[in-house]
Length: 106
Length: 156
Image 1 (cartoon, chains in turn orange, purple):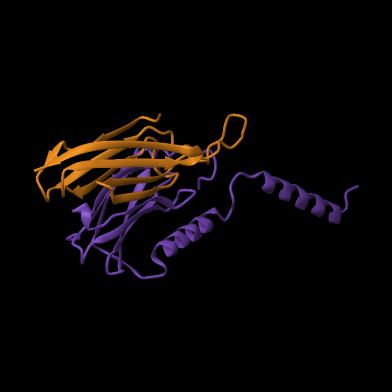
Image 2: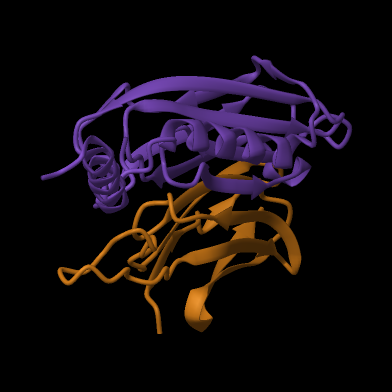
């Protein structure tokens, strides 16, 4: 299981804009590097990231080889109601990582 | 004895062989530019891109191209009627121009995105924002890279 790290505030006021930071552990092999014997190392990257808030998608990103290893994505969302935020990363060679975080909105 | 004709044929052959062994494509700069133009067209569908509204923050001098912090902020109220639909990031000198494309909406609250990019060589970094009314805005920043992102070949 791939390791991920996500920071979401545990509680927020209704209507407040919250910042979410996500990090997934992944080498993001760009497919342009070669081994010492000259063979091309095949591409192995995370291609999609999405975040849904109580089942509604609020953010989605498409990643390319030019995203640094262990991709960090920081974005914002409006705290509308208490519930869970679901994060999902998918990539080459069947890579899937998921994470969920709870938020209490007052 | 080598005739003049034979000498020219030999020289031409040696030149061709040398060229085949060369690592770099002589047209690499033109190809990169064409790839960037194609990528921008794919995103905008040929619509005009105006400078403004977008603020791209990248350090002007990058000592390590493997992880360059990039922040994009778009000046938008992020309401249902007026919001940023997508933010796209490109680099000029990477083997592929794409870095990241993000889809957001009024629920983002603020149009702000931060990530870390790989930059292969000194050149422009471009951020394009697609607004709900169908207009495109951009900001370009030139950066100097001292240590390039891992690439053994394909550098200019």
